[in-house]
Figure 1 (cartoon, rainbow, N blue to C red):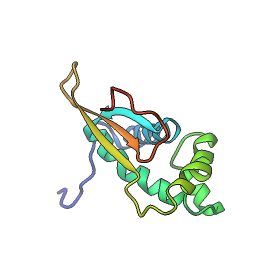
Figure 2 (cartoon, rainbow, N blue to C red):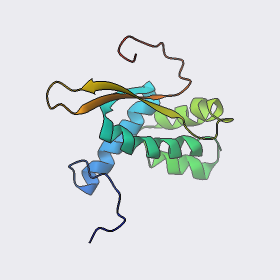
Figure 3 (spheres, rainbow, N blue to C red):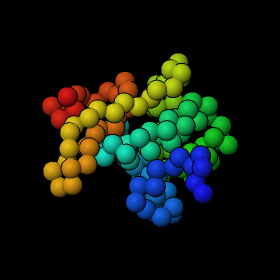
Figure 4 (tube, helix red, strand yellow):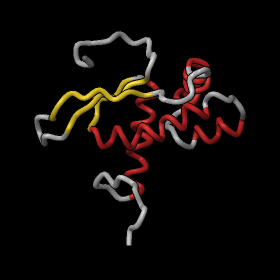
Length: 127
Protein backbone atom coordinates (compact mmCIF):
# COMPACT_ATOMS: atom_id res chain seq x y z
CA UNK A 1 0.00 0.00 0.00
CA UNK A 2 1.14 3.54 -0.75
CA UNK A 3 -0.26 5.34 2.28
CA UNK A 4 1.32 8.77 2.82
CA UNK A 5 3.75 8.39 -0.07
CA UNK A 6 3.25 11.71 -1.85
CA UNK A 7 6.07 11.71 -4.39
CA UNK A 8 5.21 12.80 -7.92
CA UNK A 9 6.42 9.92 -10.08
CA UNK A 10 6.39 11.95 -13.33
CA UNK A 11 6.10 8.81 -15.44
CA UNK A 12 9.67 7.74 -14.74
CA UNK A 13 11.58 5.24 -12.69
CA UNK A 14 13.32 6.62 -9.59
CA UNK A 15 16.80 6.99 -11.10
CA UNK A 16 15.55 8.70 -14.24
CA UNK A 17 13.29 10.97 -12.16
CA UNK A 18 16.20 11.95 -9.91
CA UNK A 19 18.38 12.78 -12.94
CA UNK A 20 15.63 14.81 -14.58
CA UNK A 21 15.01 16.84 -11.42
CA UNK A 22 18.75 17.38 -10.99
CA UNK A 23 18.96 18.64 -14.58
CA UNK A 24 16.05 21.02 -14.04
CA UNK A 25 17.51 22.36 -10.79
CA UNK A 26 20.86 22.96 -12.49
CA UNK A 27 19.18 24.77 -15.39
CA UNK A 28 17.13 26.87 -12.98
CA UNK A 29 20.23 27.88 -11.04
CA UNK A 30 22.29 28.75 -14.12
CA UNK A 31 19.61 30.42 -16.24
CA UNK A 32 17.29 31.61 -13.43
CA UNK A 33 14.25 30.79 -15.57
CA UNK A 34 13.01 27.43 -16.91
CA UNK A 35 10.03 26.60 -19.08
CA UNK A 36 8.50 23.24 -18.17
CA UNK A 37 5.25 21.52 -17.21
CA UNK A 38 3.35 22.39 -14.05
CA UNK A 39 3.86 19.00 -12.40
CA UNK A 40 7.62 19.08 -12.99
CA UNK A 41 7.85 22.67 -11.75
CA UNK A 42 6.10 21.77 -8.52
CA UNK A 43 8.46 18.83 -8.02
CA UNK A 44 11.54 20.96 -8.72
CA UNK A 45 10.45 23.91 -6.60
CA UNK A 46 10.79 22.21 -3.22
CA UNK A 47 14.19 20.70 -4.02
CA UNK A 48 15.51 23.97 -5.48
CA UNK A 49 14.43 25.98 -2.45
CA UNK A 50 16.20 23.56 -0.12
CA UNK A 51 19.39 23.87 -2.17
CA UNK A 52 19.25 27.68 -2.19
CA UNK A 53 18.72 27.62 1.57
CA UNK A 54 21.88 25.50 1.89
CA UNK A 55 23.65 28.13 -0.23
CA UNK A 56 23.05 30.77 2.43
CA UNK A 57 25.64 29.20 4.75
CA UNK A 58 28.97 28.78 3.00
CA UNK A 59 30.61 25.78 4.64
CA UNK A 60 32.43 22.80 3.18
CA UNK A 61 29.64 20.49 4.33
CA UNK A 62 26.89 22.53 2.64
CA UNK A 63 28.99 22.84 -0.54
CA UNK A 64 29.30 19.06 -0.73
CA UNK A 65 25.58 18.57 -0.21
CA UNK A 66 24.79 21.09 -2.96
CA UNK A 67 27.40 19.56 -5.29
CA UNK A 68 25.59 16.25 -4.96
CA UNK A 69 22.30 17.88 -5.94
CA UNK A 70 23.33 19.83 -9.06
CA UNK A 71 25.53 19.15 -12.08
CA UNK A 72 28.74 21.12 -12.55
CA UNK A 73 30.93 23.27 -10.39
CA UNK A 74 29.71 26.51 -11.96
CA UNK A 75 26.21 25.86 -10.59
CA UNK A 76 27.66 25.28 -7.11
CA UNK A 77 29.69 28.48 -7.36
CA UNK A 78 26.65 30.46 -8.47
CA UNK A 79 24.56 29.14 -5.58
CA UNK A 80 27.12 30.17 -2.98
CA UNK A 81 28.49 33.36 -4.60
CA UNK A 82 25.31 34.91 -6.03
CA UNK A 83 22.10 33.23 -4.89
CA UNK A 84 23.05 32.69 -1.24
CA UNK A 85 23.88 36.36 -0.58
CA UNK A 86 20.91 37.52 -2.71
CA UNK A 87 18.42 35.58 -0.60
CA UNK A 88 20.22 35.89 2.76
CA UNK A 89 17.44 38.00 4.31
CA UNK A 90 14.54 36.16 2.67
CA UNK A 91 12.91 33.40 4.76
CA UNK A 92 12.12 31.06 1.86
CA UNK A 93 9.95 31.46 -1.22
CA UNK A 94 12.79 31.85 -3.72
CA UNK A 95 10.86 30.63 -6.77
CA UNK A 96 7.73 31.66 -8.63
CA UNK A 97 5.54 29.71 -11.07
CA UNK A 98 3.92 31.63 -13.92
CA UNK A 99 1.29 29.71 -15.89
CA UNK A 100 1.40 29.94 -19.69
CA UNK A 101 -1.51 27.71 -20.68
CA UNK A 102 -1.71 24.30 -22.31
CA UNK A 103 1.17 23.02 -24.43
CA UNK A 104 0.30 22.45 -28.07
CA UNK A 105 1.52 18.85 -28.41
CA UNK A 106 0.01 17.11 -25.39
CA UNK A 107 -2.08 19.83 -23.70
CA UNK A 108 0.01 19.67 -20.53
CA UNK A 109 -0.14 22.85 -18.45
CA UNK A 110 3.05 24.75 -19.30
CA UNK A 111 4.67 27.14 -16.85
CA UNK A 112 7.76 29.24 -16.29
CA UNK A 113 9.61 28.45 -13.09
CA UNK A 114 11.83 31.39 -12.18
CA UNK A 115 13.77 32.77 -9.28
CA UNK A 116 12.22 35.71 -7.45
CA UNK A 117 14.21 38.99 -7.56
CA UNK A 118 16.03 37.82 -10.67
CA UNK A 119 17.96 40.49 -12.55
CA UNK A 120 16.79 39.02 -15.87
CA UNK A 121 14.51 41.27 -17.90
CA UNK A 122 10.82 40.38 -17.98
CA UNK A 123 9.94 39.18 -21.48
CA UNK A 124 6.60 38.99 -23.22
CA UNK A 125 6.70 35.20 -22.77
CA UNK A 126 6.77 35.43 -18.98
CA UNK A 127 3.81 37.86 -18.72
